[in-house]
Amino acid sequence: MNFDDTPQEAAFRAEARKWIQANAPKDLADELGAAGTGRIRLRETNLLEASKKWQKKKFDAGWATISWPKEFGGRGASPIERVIWSQEEGVYGKLHGPFLIGQGMCGPTIMAFGTDELKKKYLPKMASGEEVWCQLFSEPSGGSDVAGLRTRGERDGDDWIINGQKIWTSGAHYSDYGLLIARTDANLPKHKGLTMFFLDMKSPGVEVRPIKQASGEAEFNEVYFTNVRIPDHQRLGEVNNGWTVSLTTLMNERMSIGARVATGFPEMFEFCAQLMLEDGPALDNPTVKSKLASWATRTSGLKYTSYRAISSLSKGERPGPENSIGKLVAGSMLQDIATFAMELQGAAGVLTDPAQAEAAAQFQAMFLRSPSSRIAGGTDEILRNIIAERVLGLPGDIRVDKDVAFNKVAVKGR
Ligand SMILES: Cc1cc2nc3c(=O)[nH]c(=O)nc-3n(C[C@H](O)[C@H](O)[C@H](O)COP(=O)(O)OP(=O)(O)OC[C@H]3O[C@@H](n4cnc5c(N)ncnc54)[C@H](O)[C@@H]3O)c2cc1C
Image 1 (cartoon, rainbow, N blue to C red):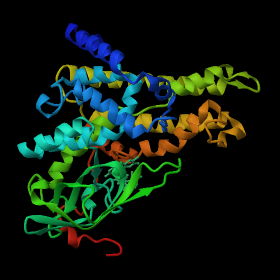
Image 2: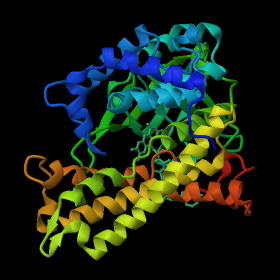
Image 3: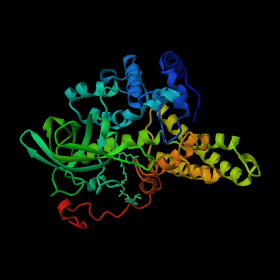
Image 4: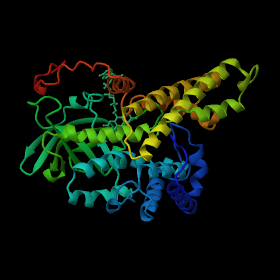
């Protein structure tokens, strides 16, 4: 592993830094810097508007979706340049939230399976942030096992008619388009009768119902489809080959989520460094010290694991399934850290108002958000399965329904 920039990487870093210093929304820097894991709220600015503004500015100057080809709104940058860019973008990268799914997952899927016409029409506006996309995969009966989904797509002339329900769709309430996978042939085994489409989220028959989270926010949704028409030219890939298409989306999901899972350790260390307990400074307390030491060790492990991935990107290699460990370790650490921080606050740990609670209630927000990082983009158990099967070479899960026609699979209540 070599952690130093090559001369070419150093030149790229200097150019990116100079542009960011001259153009970033500095008025938001303090608020973005103080926004902890689990909550970004701007006092006087609408977060979505601020995000779109920064994205458009980057796009106009050639700094948006930098690893995409130039013709689709990117810069043709290498994966390592993308890593350098995000290191330099720093707190302003927190404004990227609304575009993560579109640019990180839907865009690469369209690039791989869309026609040239579709690519030219949709990718530049996705890159500029003018159009936001969401991912309509999970359903009440198909989450970890996406191939268990039941939303139906039936051919009707040049259109497909979609009926069913998706759930946990992040950003559906502000998205312009959605990438949707539906069952188009229930006589085939579950992975074989699926087809991928994209649709205009304002299409008649699409109903978006926000899901209120424990934090009080509503960032994801249920989405219902009642006789929604999708033209066949908005199909991605062959009919009944949607599973293959979805693997491209899901592989990109793992890569983009895995790269940005927070641990909460820097916030926790800073909090403890200032905290006074009944018997003296928190940093002198043996329990606190022991926990911090253990989290510091794991943080170092994560850092060097991610450096290993960055180093392999730099050499033009693709990070492998071993990277599943990053989200697995970071997700449970985030939850442990938030829980312990609230315990240290005693009875006041139940306060959630940033004006009243310690550390502006960032650990309370982190606590409420932390379970989701152990679910989204692959649950802990699924990541363990990946590590067991693809890294350690252990025997795979038993999949009894693999070759059975979907409408013959025994399901409770059918
Ligand atoms: C914050 C957040 C944002 C999300 N955004 C989106 C989005 O934008 N679009 C979208 O389509 N989805 C989204 N999701 C959904 C997410 O992909 C699913 O929640 C996830 O895949 C798990 O599926 P599930 O909730 O149906 O749980 P299930 O799959 O029903 O799992 C329930 C439990 O069973 C365990 N389990 C399941 N299968 C196995 C197995 N084979 N071996 C061992 N254990 C197993 C799981 O680990 C889990 O503990 C989001 C989720 C979250 C939390």
